[in-house]
Image (cartoon, rainbow, N blue to C red; front, side, top):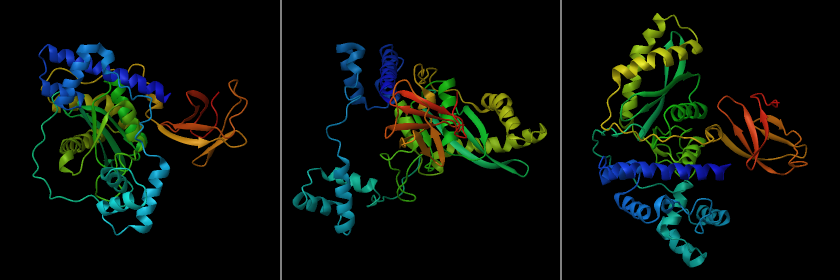
Length: 387
């Protein structure tokens, strides 16, 4: 299933380049705009142009898809180096430790590799520079180039606090998805992303705060770990969407201002409408408030072109969900978070004892078991098997 999704995403990437290249050839975009839309440097855009002109769309295919990098470090090597640093060289600087590891412990990796490893494991801190002089960030020129998502806990109904999850477009400030939940988290993020892709298409980048469901941050207030991905980060990587972390409230100014406007206007509207429960509030939000908000506060984009790409062929349900690995027990069951999932008899295999399976947990709590690409069981939120 993962290999199939990677191939589909590779097709989306090549299709995106063709669309952007056609706009570039027709002079609708210049080189800088085209490279920004593709998320690459101007130099790399020149390389892609040369490959496309020489070999057509097949020249864009990434030969690394489906292959393990020969430079990837083995888990054992990573464990040896981290344990070595923790137990013997904790007082050393990274450069000093690298020298000793090369001389005395057979390390053949570069300084950059060991530096990245120790930072990723939270064993050393990145050096801090002075705060930058902040400038107003210009909007992205096209719809779908950047999408913001944020949550706001507020007293939306008198005496009742809910989290409002809003996903909006950077180019226009239009709300693409909005709904109330009891608590912001991984499931609400998946639901917002799914609604946007389903209604508009795959977007280029996703801009969020550093909440624990979005990023792993080894040091409080520090840089996010871009190697150790959360479930949301993993799903965005599968979809080819760049995940961007905001490092200050000012950086999220666009979404913060939107929430201020929503709170000022939506609370009294819900009160006047006599709404007292979440289902009613979500219906009012989708059918009445969001269309009127977008009509009043939406901004026209600098370009009438769109960066959204259709997601046809992608199994969004099984990408935008929690994916966890488990080993099947001797009684053909899988245990996950206090639930026992019984695997039914299958014509494909006599039993699945000791097999490694993937458990997909969907935003509504339902689950499914996969043995490779084969779905071997589907379950309700309470763990009971579906027919």
